[in-house]
Image 1 (cartoon, rainbow, N blue to C red):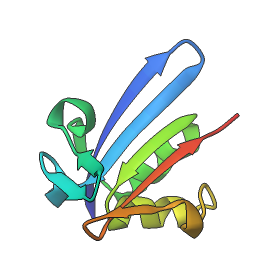
Image 2 (tube, helix red, strand yellow; image 1 turned 180 degrees about the vertical axis):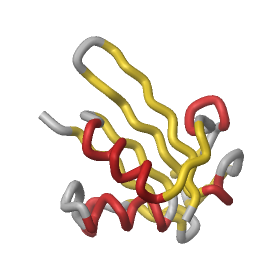
Image 3 (cartoon, rainbow, N blue to C red; image 1 turned 30 degrees about the horizontal axis):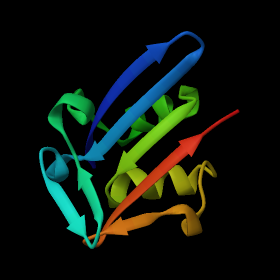
Image 4 (cartoon, rainbow, N blue to C red; image 1 turned 60 degrees about the vertical axis):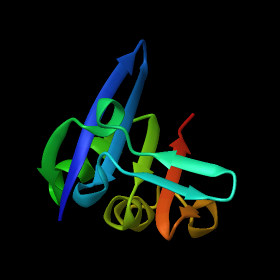
Length: 98
């Protein structure tokens, strides 16, 4: 599985934006919800699964789009199924660690 990851650092916080490879640059809409997978926000390095896992461990704020990214975070115990929002059947999960 390949995913795009991009890290943002601000003080003690590290934000990870990650999306599945095929979703970059797409916009999903369902009712009043719009999910814009912008290249400027998500379009960092294209990496394999193991690199995503490493970055998920160190990030304090996590923004994920796509089945593979979201599934990995759930498997690692970082989020819960009930916290996933689906827009046009595309899963989206945000995680904040304190």
